[in-house]
Image (cartoon, rainbow, N blue to C red; front, side, top):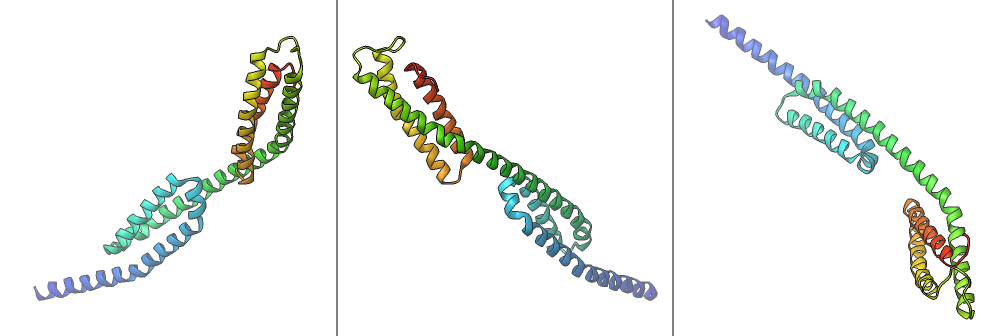
Length: 197
């Protein structure tokens, strides 16, 4: 009986030492995982927040295992979390590249629109001024159509102001969308006045 007790004590000592030997590597594994996640967190938060939330949950589970002393679970789970972080990094990079490409496309589209729309507004205002002084309106232009065009110019200027403000703040995607809407409205007003865009 005494021999069996000594053997059990020796086994318990080996297990305690074995667990203690795993504590350092487990802590290092979590520290490495946290560092890897910190490196991609900003882009991931911006471009793939749902995926980041899932990785944060996996890391929280590892921390929980560490706090409970389950070092083996930490050491076996860390590679899975690191793999998820790599996937997160690639997904964030892809979304960021897409966003940058869309921004570049919007900037390219903004240039022509920023020239066309103000010219169209000036042309419409000149046409309205000329038609307002005229005794006879051209065929296809009514007094109601002229009044609607006058009202439409104010709306058009407001739309253009919003597009310009979006451009000035660097939101070229929104600026192009608003500018295109202004261009479409300008074309509609010009047609109602017998003009071509």
